[in-house]
Image (cartoon, rainbow, N blue to C red; front, top):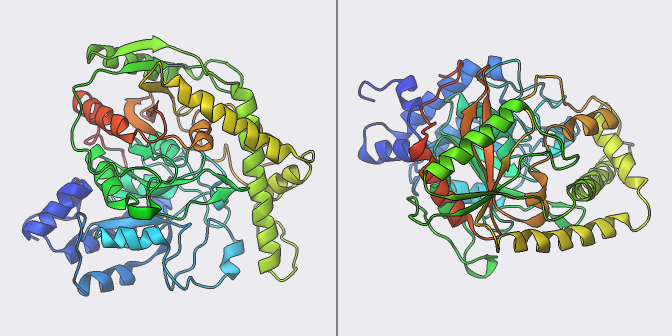
Amino acid sequence: MNTKDSNDIASFDATGLAAMIRRGEISALEAVDAAIARAETVQPKLNFMAKPLYERARQRVRGGNLTGPFAGVPFLLKDMYDMKGSKTRWGSRLTWLMPAARKNSPQVDAYEAAGLVIIGRSTMSEFGFLPTTEALACGPTRNPWDLGHTPGGSSGGSAAAVAAGVVPMADAADGGGSIRIPASCCGLFGLKPSFGRLIGDQEQAAGFDLTAEHCVSRTVRDSAGLFAAMERTGTSAVLPPLGAVTAPSTRRLRVGYFIDRVVDGQAPDPEVVSSIENTLRLLEGLGHHVERTALPFDGAITFKDFLTLFTSAAAETVDIARKALLGIKPNRFLLEPLTLEMATYARRLPTGELANAKTRLTAAASTYNDWFNRFDVIVSPVLAQPPVPIGAIHGALSFETVLERVSRYAIYTMMHNAFGAPAMSVPLHWSVAGLPIGVQFATRFGDERTLFELAYELEAAKPWADKRPPLFV
């Protein structure tokens, strides 16, 4: 491995590490072993690993025949997708009773076709319902920038591991902000694609398409490269393939922005306001036209309708659990209290409310797309506060408590899931206390090219990849 030790390797992004492996500077096995060593070092402090798969990873590398743009690069899989022979836990104690998967999920096959080597499953909130990662099944996952704060959720384990240098990028899935929120909390880049753009099991919430699959990474090129490798093609493609986006554009953009919280119109934390103001100055300095705007739909109603979908999904989960348990009533020893209370909330909704919520969201999506007749990109916060402390939002709290706290914290990301639109969190700001604060950029359905090109430009103007948290291996 020449003179490069595990810490040297950790400084490379996935694209750079794959190039080193191709050139023979290190072997794929050395890269994987180094990642495993780093994982074992920080796991006791971060608790990012739901299930290590170290021997499976080593066996795959020893088997040879690794091909693809990321051949030999170690990777983590969010614990919501199936790998043959391994249990999929979804951050829940309930799934301890379930058998191991009999086959891979489509995205696992696609990741491995791209050459990635999965070394473990990363932690998540129970069934991905929360913007933190403190599942009762695994315990709290912590942020390497400050162990007393959340790494975000629901893809918090992946984000914590990437930020700490365990792997250069990791799997994430976004059904309400679960790529962008952890990216914001951990100082990473995270782009949620348009719905149906990439290969993967797109989980529905009460029959409504919400979840998009992708990753969190330290560099834009890693995200763009994996995006190109994971695009749907042929008859399964929802959109024309974008291909690899490799550089910024010279096109100057019409940028709209809003700052106030979506639900109540109140201002977010002053440091979040500063992050947006600094970003707007940066954009203007780069020659983009910046203009204040406002949501073209009622944010409070959209949030309520999204809540109807999310809680209905929880009710479906509880019903599935009851059937899987052969009639045993799901209880607080198997499911988190929050999950059960969400299901109860959904069952008490007026008849027809779920259908009405879907109708309103579909109408709001049309209005959202029309917004981009005036703007190319919309800038907003990702979160209304810097990363919250451990214990602030978790599944043992009451539904009312969680709803009140989430509505003051994580209310800028859900609309893009409801509308199927792409959006990204870009790590452009850190708080006085040293916690990352991401800035969100969104555009119309199918226009990821604009986001990637702008991300490259921002990355060059205000680099972030070399920023290191106190816990970095």
